Image (cartoon, rainbow, N blue to C red):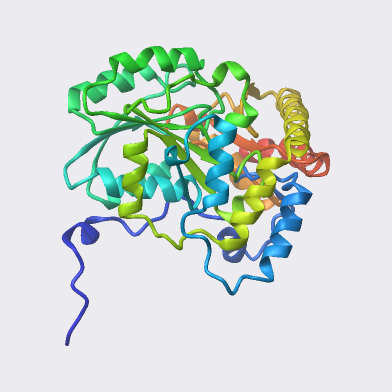
Length: 367
């Protein structure tokens, strides 16, 4: 009998995905969540202008999207003070990371990242046969010096750094990143994932010349702009690097209505300021909830707060499980020593009220 002839690489990969979504958990347990605080979504919602643009564009959903995302690229270029050819649009940062891995990684090529950093990047690297080298976080921050040193040791093609980072919510000053570029090994491209940058203090922004061939910056419309379900992200980089995306990207991968929603969202500065204010309030409240329950909140530059449970990973996992049985969707970092923590997304007071009520019960049940 005939059968598909898979690649040897595919046969070597585990049957896994980076995240188990809340919908999967709800179907498995048969219990819906009352507070969705585990996915770092913008629970406050997108700009009303973006929603209206989405509704209007839906009437023409029969059309293919603009394969060049011309209007969106033009606006992003103008807002960032770069050229049109310095911007590529993709299906979220996840999609762009996948395209970049396809462009750069052949079987056996080496890549450096932090142990516990964003797992979707690792998933894409493994999918193209890359070899991952990981360095631990240092004092709950990504250790840029160690990342660069390891990249030199293994002749890494890519170095992944998120700023602010997920899962701890911490950041490095932008000036630190800029100064470190001169120590980046020859032929190594830094991926600077800035998915949360709109929610971070100004000092976190790195001033890097757009045509610097050593860096590509990833930005997301899922966090501050509240369009996680629309899957819109963009990358900023040197024109020759950006041009190469056109060789391999899915030219009709962008949803047409999502393009219009993103365009409207980026132009609504008032709503962005509103979201930044709401997130600031929620971070402070989550920090207080943590302290009220004997946990230590880690100062956050994102739309979530990571809370140190001051015990081991097994205990933190039990806390997440117990929160789930009480209708609270939460997550935790995946590796020690980060996994001593739980991670809670910012949200409206009503959602945080539910978390505040469930947390002391979950902590007690986890003992």
